[in-house]
Amino acid sequence: MRSTVLLIAAHPDDEVFGAGGTLARHVDDGDGVHLAFVAEGESSRPEQASGVAPRKDAARAAAATLGCAAPVFFGLADQRLDTLPLLDIIRRIEALVAEIGPSVIYTHHPGDLNADHRLVAHAALTACRPLPGSVVRAIYAFEVPSSTEWSPGGAATQFSPARFVDISRTMQRKMEALRCYDAEMRPFPHPRSYEAVQALATWRGACAGLAAAEAFVVLREVADAQSLSR
Image 1 (tube, rainbow, N blue to C red):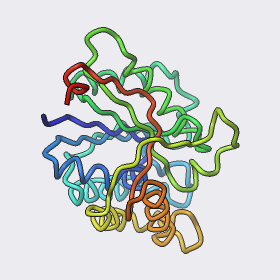
Image 2 (spheres, helix red, strand yellow):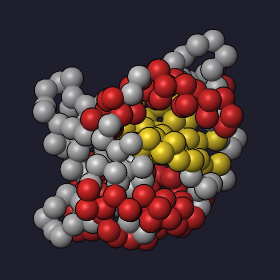
Image 3 (cartoon, rainbow, N blue to C red):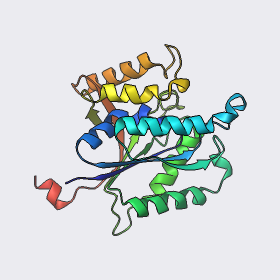
Image 4 (spheres, rainbow, N blue to C red):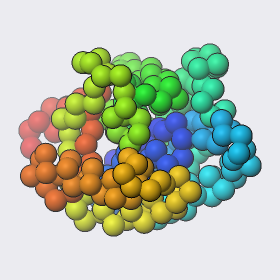
């Protein structure tokens, strides 16, 4: 059965870093894949205040490379989500979930160092709370280099994945999509270098006996009777 997938990210580029290969696999499997970006990712940088439009263009190009639907941009201020009532963000996500009807949600890990990431994770979990009749059956948290691994540490914030998706066949498309965000990349050994992204995929793959993988924390997963009987 084909699924509808929604990835809810704080900034354009988070989707490729965290789940680009997995999104490409969903597309290959015939799933409908949608992307939503809560913040614009640029206005906190005075030297790049005019970069909002190019960042949107990069997100559209990356989505097309992966085969996803055209992204939805909430356009909220970068690194200022903590100045807004959380309810405002939750309601925007609730409306999108009601419109799209996704069964699978991908979002940030709640322990990320980046404050926008943490707030988006909280808002997504709240918007997709398991009320009777909810169509959301699974919520997975991805990792974003230079944020997830830089969290303060401790059991409450540690990224401890239990789900590994084989992206051996889609790794090249992930890297092609990442090149749409070349302005966001940094020289090695920065975590946001092409070499580090490839190394992370290799390591996550090795953790599960695969050539390349993306790792996820399972925030919620509901198995119905039909899926258990297979």
